Image (cartoon, rainbow, N blue to C red; front, side):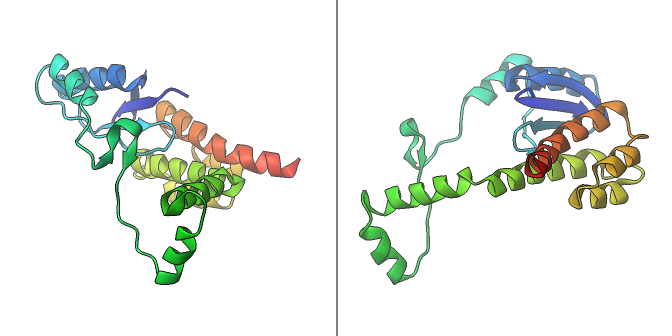
Length: 184
């Protein structure tokens, strides 16, 4: 998959790197096309783009990240964690201290296959609701998705606009791949 994809209504208008996709969406915006959505193809999250100004201004806004706390040059963002005193004591005893121990625990949890399947399922869910929530047979297709009735899901989406159907089935295909791996 590309990095991101843009839709104008039910039509896929661009796929690729964010800058290129955002500029294609900006052109659609300038042409008065409604319901523009840009998705991160990995997470299924919508990407907000400020289309005010010219193409150069839109592109410039994409490259200037908002200010962050922590050590942004190292990719570290400071946030708050609330734990019980016994948790803090245990973390303090770990090699490298609390931060290193928490990073190791998070990394171990993220490596789990169930976690990767859940991430793929959440990404597909986001896209499914955003693009197809108003389409015929959506409710049934959504139920089929959550109970892994893949053939039924394909049948239920057969009347959907081709770009929406293709993108949704691509996203769902990542979830289906986990089920196929389990069956082996």
